[in-house]
Image 1 (cartoon, rainbow, N blue to C red):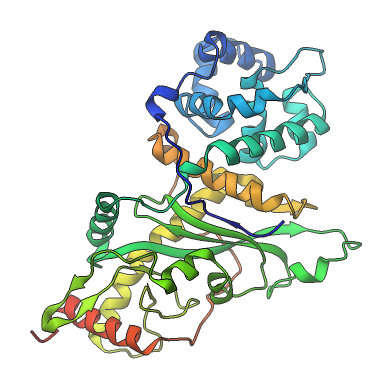
Image 2 (cartoon, rainbow, N blue to C red; image 1 turned 90 degrees about the horizontal axis):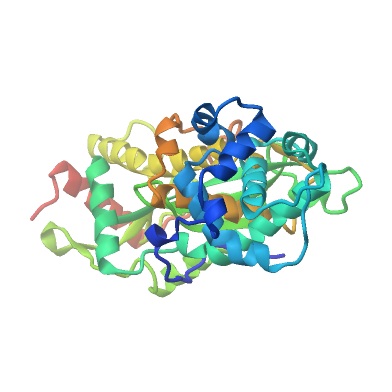
Length: 388
């Protein structure tokens, strides 16, 4: 399977009207009360309710919405998944199992023991869930489609450290894999740190929501190469993206919409990178500080992604590399759903910038001459030194 990219397709769905998980029984507290006693051995529903977010990493409201999202495609198939005691799994049971698998980072056997089922059931249910969220949840991961939405994003980015007309922050991270020595493609996935990994590129808005992703490529590829293979790159180069209102600077200079990225990316008219080198003049040093503070949202988004959806944060044992890109995509969708639902569980997470331990920053020497001039004028503008 080829690389996964963030979808542009938008489905019309009312989140607030979609909180019921399907049936009255499953939409009530009865399921969780029974589950907490049977699986967790908790003595009372009140104590069990306090444990919900720690078990599934999402609030009850978000869980119910995810159930409503996955219900039709998951229940359309006739497979009857069972617990070891012979009881059939409800929709909530299956969603709970999949969320536990994706969020805990536990092995198939570990999740199976937790739920009282077998590891093959965990594998099958998780994959069915991935297919369902991929089918029904892509509208949670898309590029802004209206001028008002873009304007809000620009305003929030500018409020961080003053960068105007910024529409996103780009970054990459590595998904680690432990592959079999007999795997014929093992050398393909060996990266510059002698790890086997798959790369994930994301473009993030100021609320740490993923707006575009690319994954599926070997971790040995550098950031610039992954970017250039992306649909986002093609659209931006053709002028079909980041083509909104230009910022008019003093002296008649215009600054088009852009995203920010670190020194591993090329400097382009629509992708602004920091100045490189030491002993930079004050205007460039100040620009780099503003740039770093703005780009930080992408690092934090990736750190949160890996902190919550721990299946992709550790070293994955012999993953199916044709399915892994879709698992990563669904983790990104779930990350966005938590933001869209204003999930209270987010408030309990510790903000960190670390998501790719051991990987040093890359440096790309590719720089568009016009982009370099625009960056200089933007730096002067921000310092108040651009001639009128």
